Image 1 (cartoon, one colour):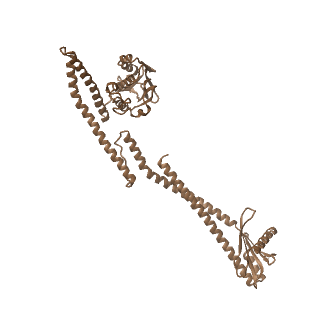
Image 2 (tube, rainbow, N blue to C red):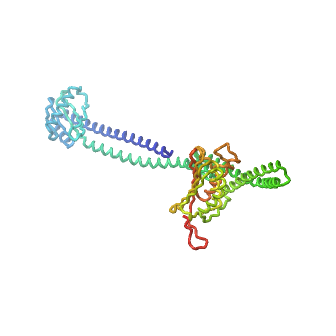
Image 3 (cartoon, rainbow, N blue to C red):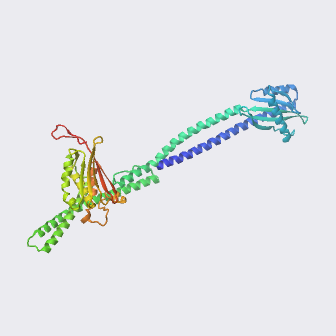
Length: 482
């Protein structure tokens, strides 16, 4: 999982936790506040009515109080001292009156009542019908410090339930709005924080591939910005080192060619002189052979330097694949016979053509076949050619059943001077530059080369080259090479 995804997920979880906590807290606090406010308001009314009746214990006062509490959401009753209902604001179900009677009786037996205490006894009761909560509250009425009756209020909290649901909906809507705004901010923040890191990741990948021209663009002045500057500085230093190395290879290759030419020429003259003794000829032959090997190495170095500098031009042409490879095989016939290696060419159509620089690609195929011969004994080498007309692609596979390459070594075989078998030298293992040159040639054609190998089973190099339709030189049609 990417860092941006982890950061976004973490911040979203924190945001959701915060919103959920705040929403639940707000809902509970709002509900309790409203319920407490409603209860206090009801108790204040009850105490006020009790005071009015106590001061004027006459029928007119009682009727006036009943009139004030006549409401669909309220059941208001006055019980006498024996808990017999005297008057009520509106008709009430007898079963409900009995429930009020039992509740008041229980409170009288369990609560301490005193004439000086003006605090109603209140409970929250949930009725079976609709499961709506009610507030039941009772206040004794004292006349001459004797209980003359009990005022009772049953407040239906249906409006409170509706308000509570409205609060819940409001909290839900606010939570969604806050979450959306917070999520957008988190995505923006995550992008701002991780985009420089992603750019640096791309930069290090390009640097690892040898592209030192990649530039990290950042305006940050924090630790991330300083890290980007350090990576850019490292890339610049590597670029200078790489340029210096290329220049060195180019110069050293050029400077070594001239003296090697002299050494080789004079050694050839010395070994071909008839008056020279056998020992002199033998030593001259050894000098000539080593000079020739060194010349190959220097030529490879010089060619690799030109590829890395981009100073190689391709001369593409239409090539008959079968004839081209058949002629190329003739260069290896003697070596194949000496090593007892069977060679097989697989091609769908002997008239098939390709479009590439045949000399450069000859160097590629020759190098790969030489490698196969070098590491295959009494085996078989197969060159397989296939074309995909729809994707305009030509594939060339060179397969052997030789020693194979360890999997851990595969990523490094394209590096210059790298040898899988460290015991081999340029005498029996090549210059170590062949595959590096091969890769440059293939990439110059816009293609790719991959390798698949297993120890003891063999190695397969697969070349993929893009193709295109080319007009015939006489202008009479086109070569269908794609």
